[in-house]
Length: 343
Image (cartoon, rainbow, N blue to C red; front, side, top):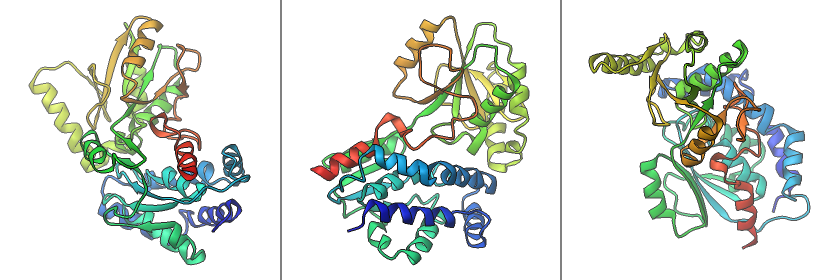
């Protein structure tokens, strides 16, 4: 049985392996981008940099482990199935990290959209630490587990509930981020918001898909900021989505604002199509708080000024940089795992 010290030491080796300048990892990323055109080398670099600087920083991991008393006591290992999503590169890394750090045994079903880089890194890691081959195992179909963490769409979540409902579980559905603007944003903040909207082509659960703006809001500065993210429209799949949505709105004479990278559409729905960004007008802070409460099951995080309404807000440009204790859907994965280990 491994100790928390063993696992922390192994994670520092993993951090070294996850150097995107290493030829072996670069080859994996290039192959993955060919297999899945929605993945780009730039997005892989962005993701891996965040993983190394936040999730695998030794000091941060030590503090994280101490916060859950992992140095004082070990859990009773359970086999935890993880169903990975594949909407953005390495999106399930935090779940796998938590299971491994807690001392449980991960049984992983990789997403077919992201089954090259993730398993490739794991194989290399196990070459240096053979005991990890028991701690983390791949399965084409989960059939050997005692608890489950599954992430998917609203449609697949219904299947997950039916199939995994009798086990201890965390099941996630579709969510998106929203941003609250008041018209006083700086250029740097708007540029950060453009990152929150367009990173990963808007496919992540922490991508901003709707902005909440005051009546009379002037959109031009925001559109200028979005237009600077000019590589998105050069991507053939993204451009196809953008052109399709533009054509639909023109043909149906639906009001819209045209930017070179994204269409802005007044729409009540939180989730927006690829290539579009929804906006909704508000009148006061009370209306903002009421809307946030009403749609809390659809919202992953809210981006905005720290001093706006009485809501927990993520600064502009940091939606895609969650910390170790920033759990998807607000569900504390480590608390779930620690309780599991005591049952």
